[in-house]
Image (cartoon, rainbow, N blue to C red):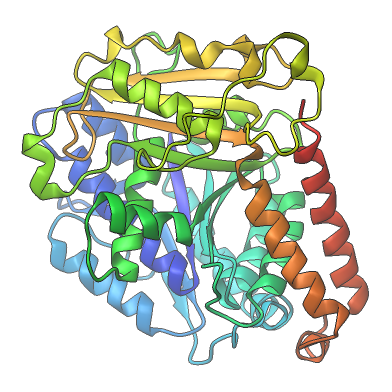
Length: 443
Protein backbone atom coordinates (compact mmCIF):
# COMPACT_ATOMS: atom_id res chain seq x y z
CA UNK A 1 0.00 0.00 0.00
CA UNK A 2 1.21 3.50 -0.82
CA UNK A 3 1.69 6.70 1.18
CA UNK A 4 1.16 10.12 -0.40
CA UNK A 5 3.47 12.65 1.23
CA UNK A 6 2.67 16.38 1.32
CA UNK A 7 5.75 18.54 1.93
CA UNK A 8 4.90 21.97 3.33
CA UNK A 9 7.08 25.04 3.73
CA UNK A 10 10.86 25.26 3.77
CA UNK A 11 11.42 22.73 6.54
CA UNK A 12 8.82 20.25 5.23
CA UNK A 13 10.31 20.25 1.75
CA UNK A 14 13.87 19.85 2.98
CA UNK A 15 13.01 17.02 5.40
CA UNK A 16 10.84 15.37 2.73
CA UNK A 17 13.68 15.38 0.21
CA UNK A 18 16.08 13.79 2.71
CA UNK A 19 13.45 11.17 3.60
CA UNK A 20 12.95 10.09 -0.02
CA UNK A 21 16.73 10.00 -0.46
CA UNK A 22 17.16 7.68 2.53
CA UNK A 23 14.28 5.44 1.51
CA UNK A 24 15.41 5.14 -2.11
CA UNK A 25 19.05 4.38 -1.32
CA UNK A 26 17.97 1.86 1.35
CA UNK A 27 15.45 0.15 -0.94
CA UNK A 28 17.97 -0.19 -3.75
CA UNK A 29 20.83 -1.45 -1.55
CA UNK A 30 21.94 -4.99 -2.44
CA UNK A 31 19.84 -7.91 -3.65
CA UNK A 32 16.68 -7.54 -1.57
CA UNK A 33 13.92 -8.05 -4.07
CA UNK A 34 10.79 -8.41 -1.90
CA UNK A 35 11.84 -5.71 0.60
CA UNK A 36 12.87 -3.30 -2.17
CA UNK A 37 9.65 -3.81 -4.10
CA UNK A 38 7.54 -3.16 -0.99
CA UNK A 39 9.53 -0.02 -0.09
CA UNK A 40 9.40 1.38 -3.61
CA UNK A 41 5.67 0.75 -4.01
CA UNK A 42 5.07 2.51 -0.70
CA UNK A 43 6.83 5.76 -1.63
CA UNK A 44 7.39 5.81 -5.42
CA UNK A 45 5.63 5.08 -8.67
CA UNK A 46 7.51 4.08 -11.80
CA UNK A 47 7.41 5.69 -15.23
CA UNK A 48 7.32 3.66 -18.44
CA UNK A 49 11.11 4.09 -18.54
CA UNK A 50 11.54 2.62 -15.07
CA UNK A 51 12.27 5.93 -13.32
CA UNK A 52 11.23 6.20 -9.66
CA UNK A 53 8.98 9.20 -9.01
CA UNK A 54 8.18 10.20 -5.43
CA UNK A 55 4.54 10.01 -4.36
CA UNK A 56 4.77 13.57 -3.10
CA UNK A 57 3.21 17.00 -3.41
CA UNK A 58 5.52 19.96 -2.71
CA UNK A 59 3.94 23.16 -1.39
CA UNK A 60 5.57 26.45 -0.42
CA UNK A 61 4.64 30.08 -0.81
CA UNK A 62 8.12 30.80 -2.18
CA UNK A 63 9.70 28.77 -5.03
CA UNK A 64 13.34 28.64 -3.96
CA UNK A 65 13.35 25.55 -1.71
CA UNK A 66 11.02 23.58 -4.00
CA UNK A 67 13.30 24.25 -6.98
CA UNK A 68 16.33 23.18 -4.95
CA UNK A 69 14.65 19.97 -3.82
CA UNK A 70 13.51 19.03 -7.31
CA UNK A 71 16.93 19.74 -8.82
CA UNK A 72 18.78 17.75 -6.16
CA UNK A 73 16.44 14.79 -6.61
CA UNK A 74 16.88 14.82 -10.38
CA UNK A 75 20.69 15.00 -10.05
CA UNK A 76 20.75 11.98 -7.75
CA UNK A 77 19.87 9.78 -10.76
CA UNK A 78 18.06 7.43 -8.33
CA UNK A 79 14.67 9.09 -8.14
CA UNK A 80 12.90 12.35 -8.90
CA UNK A 81 9.81 14.40 -8.09
CA UNK A 82 6.93 14.61 -10.55
CA UNK A 83 7.31 17.54 -12.93
CA UNK A 84 3.84 18.85 -12.08
CA UNK A 85 3.60 17.80 -8.44
CA UNK A 86 4.50 21.15 -6.87
CA UNK A 87 2.85 24.46 -6.05
CA UNK A 88 4.52 27.73 -5.09
CA UNK A 89 3.92 31.47 -5.13
CA UNK A 90 6.19 34.48 -5.01
CA UNK A 91 5.23 35.70 -1.54
CA UNK A 92 5.72 33.88 1.76
CA UNK A 93 3.56 33.83 4.87
CA UNK A 94 5.86 36.10 6.89
CA UNK A 95 6.21 33.60 9.76
CA UNK A 96 2.57 34.27 10.57
CA UNK A 97 0.27 31.27 11.15
CA UNK A 98 -2.84 33.36 10.49
CA UNK A 99 -1.51 34.52 7.11
CA UNK A 100 -0.90 30.93 6.06
CA UNK A 101 -4.10 29.48 7.48
CA UNK A 102 -6.58 32.28 6.71
CA UNK A 103 -5.14 33.75 3.49
CA UNK A 104 -2.76 31.57 1.50
CA UNK A 105 -4.46 28.27 2.35
CA UNK A 106 -8.01 29.18 1.24
CA UNK A 107 -6.73 31.18 -1.74
CA UNK A 108 -4.91 28.20 -3.24
CA UNK A 109 -7.10 25.36 -2.00
CA UNK A 110 -8.31 24.18 -5.41
CA UNK A 111 -4.82 23.98 -6.89
CA UNK A 112 -3.43 22.06 -3.92
CA UNK A 113 -6.36 19.65 -3.76
CA UNK A 114 -5.96 18.90 -7.46
CA UNK A 115 -2.27 18.01 -6.98
CA UNK A 116 -3.09 15.70 -4.07
CA UNK A 117 -5.95 14.09 -6.02
CA UNK A 118 -3.59 13.23 -8.89
CA UNK A 119 -1.09 11.58 -6.55
CA UNK A 120 -3.80 9.62 -4.75
CA UNK A 121 -5.20 8.34 -8.05
CA UNK A 122 -1.75 7.00 -8.99
CA UNK A 123 -1.90 4.65 -6.00
CA UNK A 124 -3.30 1.17 -6.48
CA UNK A 125 -4.11 1.13 -2.76
CA UNK A 126 -3.82 4.21 -0.56
CA UNK A 127 -2.37 3.56 2.90
CA UNK A 128 -2.85 7.18 3.95
CA UNK A 129 -1.37 10.65 3.78
CA UNK A 130 1.61 12.11 5.59
CA UNK A 131 2.08 15.87 5.95
CA UNK A 132 5.64 17.00 6.73
CA UNK A 133 5.92 20.49 8.19
CA UNK A 134 7.44 22.67 10.89
CA UNK A 135 5.47 24.50 13.56
CA UNK A 136 7.62 27.63 13.83
CA UNK A 137 7.03 29.59 10.62
CA UNK A 138 3.96 30.66 8.68
CA UNK A 139 3.68 28.42 5.62
CA UNK A 140 4.62 25.09 7.20
CA UNK A 141 2.42 25.67 10.22
CA UNK A 142 -0.44 27.80 8.85
CA UNK A 143 -0.79 26.48 5.29
CA UNK A 144 0.15 23.03 6.62
CA UNK A 145 -2.72 23.09 9.09
CA UNK A 146 -5.15 24.29 6.43
CA UNK A 147 -4.02 21.63 3.96
CA UNK A 148 -4.40 18.95 6.65
CA UNK A 149 -7.96 20.18 7.16
CA UNK A 150 -8.58 19.84 3.42
CA UNK A 151 -7.10 16.33 3.40
CA UNK A 152 -9.42 15.34 6.23
CA UNK A 153 -12.43 16.76 4.36
CA UNK A 154 -11.56 14.95 1.11
CA UNK A 155 -10.38 11.69 2.68
CA UNK A 156 -12.44 11.35 5.87
CA UNK A 157 -11.65 7.64 6.25
CA UNK A 158 -7.96 7.70 5.32
CA UNK A 159 -5.17 7.71 7.87
CA UNK A 160 -3.42 11.06 8.25
CA UNK A 161 -0.06 11.34 9.99
CA UNK A 162 1.47 14.77 10.62
CA UNK A 163 5.22 14.94 11.06
CA UNK A 164 6.19 18.12 12.92
CA UNK A 165 9.63 19.65 13.39
CA UNK A 166 9.74 21.46 16.72
CA UNK A 167 11.77 24.70 16.71
CA UNK A 168 14.90 25.35 18.75
CA UNK A 169 14.05 26.45 22.28
CA UNK A 170 16.31 29.49 21.95
CA UNK A 171 14.08 30.68 19.12
CA UNK A 172 14.21 30.84 15.36
CA UNK A 173 11.14 33.07 15.02
CA UNK A 174 9.88 35.55 17.62
CA UNK A 175 6.28 34.29 17.32
CA UNK A 176 7.15 30.59 16.99
CA UNK A 177 5.33 29.70 20.21
CA UNK A 178 2.10 31.29 18.95
CA UNK A 179 2.42 29.38 15.68
CA UNK A 180 3.12 26.14 17.55
CA UNK A 181 0.09 26.47 19.85
CA UNK A 182 -2.27 27.26 16.98
CA UNK A 183 -0.88 24.42 14.85
CA UNK A 184 -1.05 21.73 17.52
CA UNK A 185 -4.51 22.73 18.73
CA UNK A 186 -5.95 22.43 15.23
CA UNK A 187 -4.06 19.28 14.23
CA UNK A 188 -5.27 17.50 17.34
CA UNK A 189 -8.76 17.67 15.85
CA UNK A 190 -7.68 16.58 12.37
CA UNK A 191 -4.80 14.13 12.52
CA UNK A 192 -4.74 10.47 13.54
CA UNK A 193 -1.26 10.82 15.00
CA UNK A 194 1.37 13.55 15.34
CA UNK A 195 5.02 12.50 15.20
CA UNK A 196 7.36 15.15 16.60
CA UNK A 197 11.10 15.75 16.19
CA UNK A 198 12.71 18.40 18.38
CA UNK A 199 15.47 20.42 16.70
CA UNK A 200 17.38 20.76 19.97
CA UNK A 201 17.52 16.98 20.43
CA UNK A 202 18.51 16.26 16.84
CA UNK A 203 21.17 18.98 17.03
CA UNK A 204 22.73 17.23 20.04
CA UNK A 205 22.74 13.93 18.14
CA UNK A 206 24.62 15.60 15.29
CA UNK A 207 27.23 17.07 17.61
CA UNK A 208 27.69 14.40 20.29
CA UNK A 209 27.05 11.16 18.39
CA UNK A 210 27.91 11.98 14.78
CA UNK A 211 30.82 14.31 15.68
CA UNK A 212 29.73 17.00 13.21
CA UNK A 213 31.66 20.19 13.97
CA UNK A 214 29.65 22.77 12.05
CA UNK A 215 26.06 21.55 12.11
CA UNK A 216 23.80 22.64 9.25
CA UNK A 217 20.06 22.26 8.74
CA UNK A 218 20.97 19.59 6.19
CA UNK A 219 22.70 17.55 8.91
CA UNK A 220 19.69 17.90 11.20
CA UNK A 221 17.30 16.94 8.40
CA UNK A 222 19.32 13.82 7.53
CA UNK A 223 19.07 12.57 11.12
CA UNK A 224 15.31 13.18 11.09
CA UNK A 225 15.03 11.37 7.73
CA UNK A 226 17.03 8.40 9.04
CA UNK A 227 14.72 8.03 12.03
CA UNK A 228 11.57 8.52 9.96
CA UNK A 229 12.75 6.04 7.34
CA UNK A 230 13.47 3.44 10.00
CA UNK A 231 9.82 3.73 11.06
CA UNK A 232 8.25 3.77 7.60
CA UNK A 233 10.29 1.21 5.66
CA UNK A 234 8.71 -2.27 5.37
CA UNK A 235 8.77 -4.49 8.46
CA UNK A 236 6.99 -7.62 9.61
CA UNK A 237 4.34 -7.32 12.31
CA UNK A 238 3.39 -10.10 14.70
CA UNK A 239 0.50 -11.23 12.51
CA UNK A 240 1.86 -10.39 9.02
CA UNK A 241 2.74 -14.05 8.24
CA UNK A 242 6.02 -13.04 6.69
CA UNK A 243 4.51 -10.67 4.12
CA UNK A 244 5.57 -7.04 3.69
CA UNK A 245 3.27 -4.38 2.35
CA UNK A 246 0.44 -4.03 4.84
CA UNK A 247 -0.90 -0.58 5.66
CA UNK A 248 2.06 1.18 7.35
CA UNK A 249 0.15 4.23 8.61
CA UNK A 250 -2.81 2.16 9.75
CA UNK A 251 -0.52 -0.22 11.64
CA UNK A 252 1.34 2.71 13.21
CA UNK A 253 -1.83 4.49 14.34
CA UNK A 254 -3.52 1.35 15.67
CA UNK A 255 -0.37 0.39 17.59
CA UNK A 256 0.22 3.78 19.20
CA UNK A 257 -2.73 6.20 19.04
CA UNK A 258 -5.50 4.11 20.57
CA UNK A 259 -7.18 7.05 22.35
CA UNK A 260 -8.12 10.41 20.75
CA UNK A 261 -6.74 12.32 23.74
CA UNK A 262 -3.24 10.92 23.17
CA UNK A 263 -1.77 11.51 19.72
CA UNK A 264 1.78 12.78 20.32
CA UNK A 265 4.53 10.39 19.23
CA UNK A 266 8.28 10.69 19.78
CA UNK A 267 10.99 8.57 18.20
CA UNK A 268 14.56 7.54 19.02
CA UNK A 269 16.96 5.29 17.15
CA UNK A 270 20.16 3.46 18.08
CA UNK A 271 22.89 3.18 17.07
CA UNK A 272 23.80 6.48 15.42
CA UNK A 273 27.49 6.73 14.59
CA UNK A 274 29.59 8.64 12.04
CA UNK A 275 29.85 6.95 8.65
CA UNK A 276 33.61 6.74 9.09
CA UNK A 277 33.18 4.68 12.27
CA UNK A 278 30.57 2.26 11.00
CA UNK A 279 33.01 -0.36 9.74
CA UNK A 280 34.76 -0.48 13.14
CA UNK A 281 31.63 -0.55 15.31
CA UNK A 282 29.96 -3.69 16.62
CA UNK A 283 26.60 -3.80 18.35
CA UNK A 284 24.73 -6.57 20.15
CA UNK A 285 20.98 -6.81 20.59
CA UNK A 286 21.12 -7.27 24.40
CA UNK A 287 23.21 -4.13 24.85
CA UNK A 288 21.17 -2.04 22.38
CA UNK A 289 17.84 -3.06 23.91
CA UNK A 290 19.10 -2.47 27.46
CA UNK A 291 20.10 1.05 26.47
CA UNK A 292 16.87 1.64 24.54
CA UNK A 293 14.74 0.58 27.51
CA UNK A 294 16.57 2.93 29.87
CA UNK A 295 16.30 5.75 27.30
CA UNK A 296 12.53 5.21 27.36
CA UNK A 297 12.29 5.12 31.16
CA UNK A 298 14.44 8.22 31.70
CA UNK A 299 13.15 10.08 28.61
CA UNK A 300 16.57 10.33 26.96
CA UNK A 301 16.83 10.51 23.17
CA UNK A 302 20.53 9.58 22.96
CA UNK A 303 22.70 6.78 24.30
CA UNK A 304 25.12 9.36 25.69
CA UNK A 305 23.82 10.90 28.88
CA UNK A 306 21.34 8.17 29.85
CA UNK A 307 20.23 8.66 33.45
CA UNK A 308 20.62 5.16 34.89
CA UNK A 309 19.37 6.37 38.28
CA UNK A 310 15.77 6.60 37.05
CA UNK A 311 13.99 3.39 38.01
CA UNK A 312 10.55 1.97 37.40
CA UNK A 313 8.19 2.33 40.37
CA UNK A 314 7.37 -0.96 42.04
CA UNK A 315 4.13 -2.47 43.29
CA UNK A 316 1.55 -0.07 44.67
CA UNK A 317 3.80 2.90 43.90
CA UNK A 318 2.54 2.69 40.33
CA UNK A 319 -0.69 4.38 41.32
CA UNK A 320 0.98 7.35 42.99
CA UNK A 321 1.74 10.64 41.34
CA UNK A 322 4.99 10.48 39.39
CA UNK A 323 5.64 14.22 39.47
CA UNK A 324 9.30 14.91 40.00
CA UNK A 325 10.40 11.23 39.82
CA UNK A 326 11.82 11.60 36.31
CA UNK A 327 10.05 8.41 35.20
CA UNK A 328 8.49 8.57 31.73
CA UNK A 329 5.10 6.80 31.70
CA UNK A 330 3.97 5.33 28.36
CA UNK A 331 0.56 4.81 26.88
CA UNK A 332 1.95 2.64 24.06
CA UNK A 333 5.30 1.73 22.50
CA UNK A 334 6.31 0.36 19.12
CA UNK A 335 9.76 -1.23 18.87
CA UNK A 336 11.15 -1.75 15.35
CA UNK A 337 14.21 -3.97 14.98
CA UNK A 338 16.11 -4.28 11.70
CA UNK A 339 19.16 -6.24 10.64
CA UNK A 340 21.30 -9.25 11.46
CA UNK A 341 20.06 -11.90 13.94
CA UNK A 342 16.91 -9.87 14.52
CA UNK A 343 14.84 -12.93 15.44
CA UNK A 344 17.17 -13.72 18.36
CA UNK A 345 16.59 -10.32 20.03
CA UNK A 346 14.95 -10.60 23.44
CA UNK A 347 12.39 -7.79 23.93
CA UNK A 348 10.64 -8.92 27.12
CA UNK A 349 11.87 -5.85 29.02
CA UNK A 350 9.50 -3.68 26.99
CA UNK A 351 6.50 -5.75 28.06
CA UNK A 352 6.88 -4.80 31.73
CA UNK A 353 3.45 -3.51 32.92
CA UNK A 354 5.22 -0.91 35.09
CA UNK A 355 6.17 0.97 31.90
CA UNK A 356 2.56 1.59 30.97
CA UNK A 357 -0.60 3.23 32.17
CA UNK A 358 -2.71 1.07 34.48
CA UNK A 359 -5.78 1.08 32.23
CA UNK A 360 -4.13 -0.67 29.28
CA UNK A 361 -2.54 -4.11 29.42
CA UNK A 362 1.11 -4.34 28.39
CA UNK A 363 0.09 -6.88 25.72
CA UNK A 364 -2.06 -4.22 24.08
CA UNK A 365 0.35 -1.36 24.78
CA UNK A 366 3.52 -2.92 23.32
CA UNK A 367 4.01 -3.80 19.66
CA UNK A 368 7.05 -5.28 17.94
CA UNK A 369 8.01 -5.10 14.25
CA UNK A 370 11.03 -6.86 12.79
CA UNK A 371 12.91 -7.06 9.52
CA UNK A 372 16.04 -9.15 8.86
CA UNK A 373 17.10 -6.56 6.26
CA UNK A 374 19.75 -4.08 7.49
CA UNK A 375 18.64 -0.43 7.31
CA UNK A 376 20.60 2.48 5.86
CA UNK A 377 23.96 0.64 6.08
CA UNK A 378 23.56 -0.24 9.78
CA UNK A 379 24.04 -3.97 10.43
CA UNK A 380 21.64 -3.70 13.38
CA UNK A 381 19.19 -0.87 14.08
CA UNK A 382 16.56 -0.39 16.80
CA UNK A 383 13.89 2.32 16.67
CA UNK A 384 11.36 3.09 19.37
CA UNK A 385 8.23 5.10 18.59
CA UNK A 386 6.58 6.07 21.85
CA UNK A 387 3.27 7.58 22.89
CA UNK A 388 4.37 8.71 26.32
CA UNK A 389 5.04 11.69 28.53
CA UNK A 390 8.25 12.37 26.58
CA UNK A 391 6.95 15.59 24.99
CA UNK A 392 5.28 16.93 28.12
CA UNK A 393 8.10 19.25 29.18
CA UNK A 394 8.76 20.91 25.76
CA UNK A 395 5.01 21.25 25.24
CA UNK A 396 4.52 22.87 28.62
CA UNK A 397 7.47 25.23 28.03
CA UNK A 398 6.11 26.26 24.64
CA UNK A 399 2.61 26.98 26.00
CA UNK A 400 4.06 28.93 28.94
CA UNK A 401 6.11 31.18 26.67
CA UNK A 402 3.17 31.70 24.31
CA UNK A 403 0.84 32.57 27.20
CA UNK A 404 3.29 35.12 28.62
CA UNK A 405 3.38 36.85 25.23
CA UNK A 406 -0.39 36.66 24.88
CA UNK A 407 -0.92 38.10 28.38
CA UNK A 408 1.10 41.15 27.37
CA UNK A 409 -0.72 41.24 23.99
CA UNK A 410 2.58 41.05 22.11
CA UNK A 411 2.13 40.72 18.32
CA UNK A 412 -1.57 39.83 18.66
CA UNK A 413 -2.54 42.53 16.16
CA UNK A 414 -0.49 40.78 13.45
CA UNK A 415 -2.78 37.75 13.76
CA UNK A 416 -6.02 39.67 14.15
CA UNK A 417 -5.48 41.51 10.87
CA UNK A 418 -5.50 38.18 9.02
CA UNK A 419 -8.63 36.87 10.72
CA UNK A 420 -7.57 35.13 13.95
CA UNK A 421 -9.35 36.52 17.02
CA UNK A 422 -8.32 36.54 20.66
CA UNK A 423 -11.03 33.93 21.25
CA UNK A 424 -9.31 31.66 18.72
CA UNK A 425 -6.10 32.00 20.72
CA UNK A 426 -7.90 31.22 23.97
CA UNK A 427 -9.57 28.16 22.44
CA UNK A 428 -6.18 26.90 21.27
CA UNK A 429 -4.61 27.47 24.69
CA UNK A 430 -7.49 25.57 26.31
CA UNK A 431 -7.08 22.69 23.86
CA UNK A 432 -3.35 22.31 24.48
CA UNK A 433 -3.73 22.69 28.24
CA UNK A 434 -6.13 19.74 28.08
CA UNK A 435 -3.51 17.69 26.21
CA UNK A 436 -0.89 18.59 28.84
CA UNK A 437 -3.30 17.65 31.62
CA UNK A 438 -4.11 14.31 30.00
CA UNK A 439 -0.47 13.32 29.61
CA UNK A 440 0.40 14.59 33.10
CA UNK A 441 -2.23 12.33 34.63
CA UNK A 442 -1.11 9.10 32.96
CA UNK A 443 -0.78 6.53 35.75
